[in-house]
Length: 92
Image (cartoon, rainbow, N blue to C red; front, top):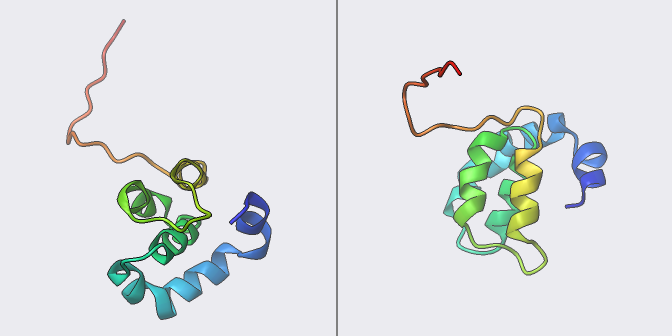
């Protein structure tokens, strides 16, 4: 998926409908490169949940991990999940 496809052709509304109606039960069970494609698509609507899957899942031959992670991490709704429960502010 190129950035133009991600932003203009596969709208977030369509991706959300497609995910909710069909893909949310299928995607986690896949054991092929299609899983990477579906989760890269899912990153358009929930990048923080798609990112960890994209870090480890099998990818399609034409898909790179760096681009998949980049696409997820640069979505406006991306947030990084911390391992720590508490965040401490440090005064300098």
